[in-house]
Image 1 (cartoon, rainbow, N blue to C red):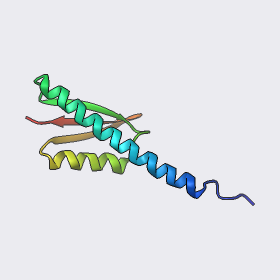
Image 2: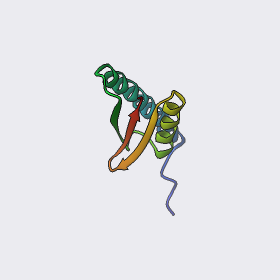
Image 3: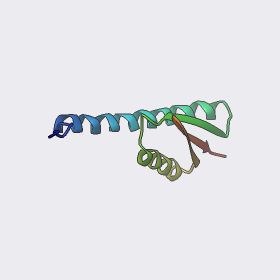
Length: 88
C-alpha cells in the first residue's frame, strides 16, 4: 500500500513559497507600472509566469489593481498570465 507523498513540513513550505510568489508578482507589477508611467505610457502589458502564482492569486492582483483605479485585463497564454494595465 502506498503512503501519502507529502509531509506537513512540505505542505507548509508550499504555502510559504506561494506567498513569496505573489509578493514577487506584486512587486513586479508595481515596478513595471512605475517605469511605464514615467515613460509616458498609458497602458502596459506585464507577463507573470504561471509557475509563480496561481489563478486565484492572479485574480487577487487584478482586484488590487482595480481597487487602485487601474483598468485591468488578464490573459492566459502558457506559460504566462499577462496583466494588461491601463491608467488613462
